[in-house]
Length: 276
Image 1 (cartoon, rainbow, N blue to C red):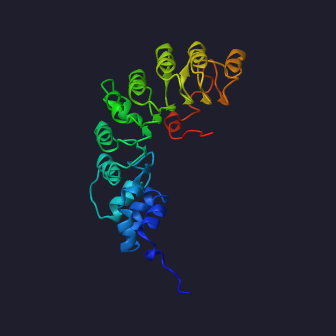
Image 2 (cartoon, helix red, strand yellow):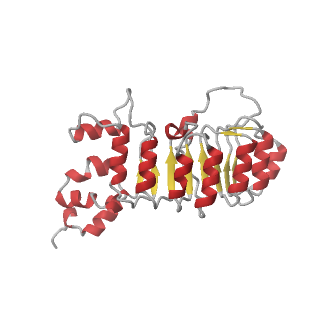
Image 3 (spheres, rainbow, N blue to C red):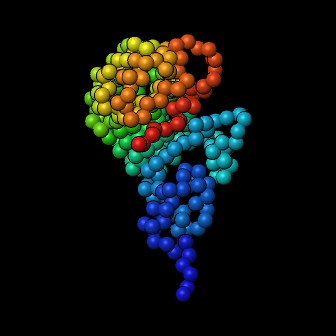
């Protein structure tokens, strides 16, 4: 029996396989194997789930962007240009997108226009840390959004308000470097009453504001408030109020900061959700 070759695989089957190999291989390896693989790699279905490395611009490491420029003999390519190029490969089919540090609001605007089918999105702190951020105005374009990772709690109240107006299937929120006061806690309870997954690891959140969330979000199945400042992890009232939450994590949280700098808050948003 004649052995079949990978390049002879039907295009639909090949696209199904290549859609699982990851962004780096799709850019740097797959297109150079043979003509059929190159053709299949251009199919938008291969680019539905795009998880960028956290850093694309680094003086210490040889990043994916550096390898891309070397492979394609490109002298200059900004983080924004590279990100938009990769996202554009999906031709509007992208449903999951983790953006890298270093990209600007211009990328957020591009994603809002080009990726209306998004169900999962990570927005890094560089896009959010601006009082005049346009992110809240873009939320309405992602009506299918279910899970959102934020690299900062800047404009959190406005973002949550827009989610409540536009995203009726929303179920999960993760915020890095968060400051959760009464306004933010009340906004979560009021605007996201059906939220199931909430990750605030490493946040500044007082006991009273945590109680607002615990008492108001009745449908939580996963709450992560590890390594927070503002309450003690073994507080009896906190543990009692959280007893009905399937997965409740509060280890390492304390009323005051005894060991500053233990947690790299910038990394927390890239940890991802727990699906069970």
